[in-house]
Length: 221
Picture (cartoon, rainbow, N blue to C red):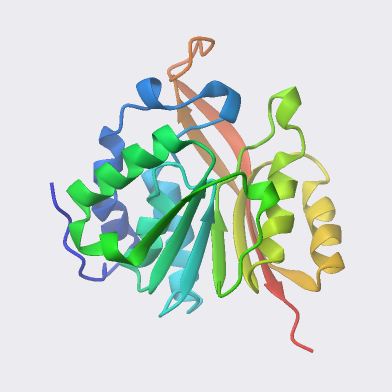
């Protein structure tokens, strides 16, 4: 199935354009220790549509940290971003992403840049917007990793929108981090993030995780 690159007329149409992602066999691809899982098409469409309505995507360079299969990047390109830089530590998953995008979104391939590397060791220039779904830091060895990603994000762009596993006081923690880098909270909401049963330890068909979707923007002096 090759998706047209026409701009979607609504959020629901954008979600429909992302529907090929529902065919990716996560149980065979994703690695538990990296906390990999597919961002639901509904949430990817929702996030990209918010940026589109806020006029943040038009002709912009997007940075997707921990890109996985690239759904957030594709969503932003479909609503007018000029290009997207997709970064992930997992070469195996990047290969799948490149093959998948080439097969389903052939008209968008030339607007994607894939980079393999550890996000926490990187810094980027020439980026307008970061849209990311970093590891939530559920496992002990990954604790705080989502905030590490966030620090790289605010050092790389003036607009950052990100998903995080919700916990009490998290908004204040992120607000403090943002202020340190001259940012302020422009948007936040609590969403229901659905993760399917893809790992051997999973016992339920669907896990619903209370998730913070938050937007930070550089303060205008």
